[in-house]
Length: 398
Image 1 (tube, rainbow, N blue to C red):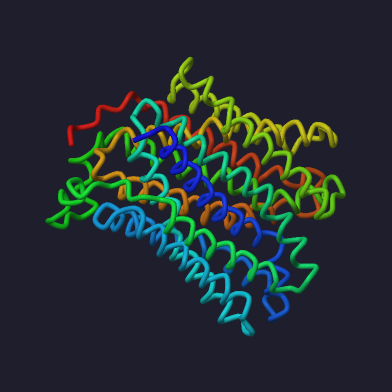
Image 2: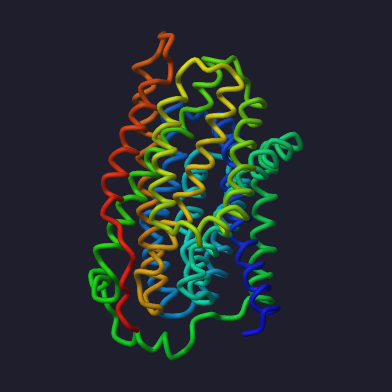
């Protein structure tokens, strides 16, 4: 494969992840207000947000398994078109029921991330894997900078304009994949799946102890991180008097640090320190950051701790993804990465629900926000205990 063609492949996969994340980011400031026009209560709004990662949790392993059997390209195209359908349905929705159906469709179509990760694994060597996963992490960070800002701007046109805009971007993405992204999974490797095998057969195609340690670490870590993201706006408003615009500035700062870390710094750190050491360091940084966040450190302290959180998260996510990919034979990459994304989605489903419940205990107190953030810190301690069992993977032969 020529350097030019592989660069094109990386670019298309990067744009696929970026557009997917922009779509998710657009919904953050827009969807709750949009749902209110249909009479949604706070509880129903929470369900509307939570049903998306729940569907991704259920669907990701199935998409991953399908990508191992029929190839990455058709799964990417179909899942991106499914997301487009979900966003257009949101834009055309005139009842809360249709909004829920749209979110379910969009979440169930969320196989593009797992298939994209498997595609990256197909075209990179094991030594390149974590650096390549860092590129995906940079796409996530950039998407979370662009998405909320784009949603807020488009909403000035009309309440449903953001959803139509993302739907159009998804259609453009599908055309780009169709015209510019060749299949990465060879027919020979697809034929290895002639006899269907359940996900329970994964350990025989992987370094099972390392893979499942990574998956458990990923789940608990993302549950802790999602507690932070779910309650941060309320915390910042109550403790610092920040409105949505200024909370957006903090989130943008986190996104910028994440892009710099995962798009550049990680490439230099990985050869020097390795995946396991960086992952554990990132977990320790997150633990300390969650302890510091609710302390009265002033506005500059809030920005500093928020950027520290971005550094910790940037050390953890690409390294865990890279380790998981190196645990598994090439023929099982799709299923393995799908299962990993499924565990991540479960963490993203549990975290916000837990965070919102815990925040209620701090209502009316001067330490508002301390309970959920310190529980998040405790979860990071649990993550570090789990991750302490990590070792360099010994992948079985294909």
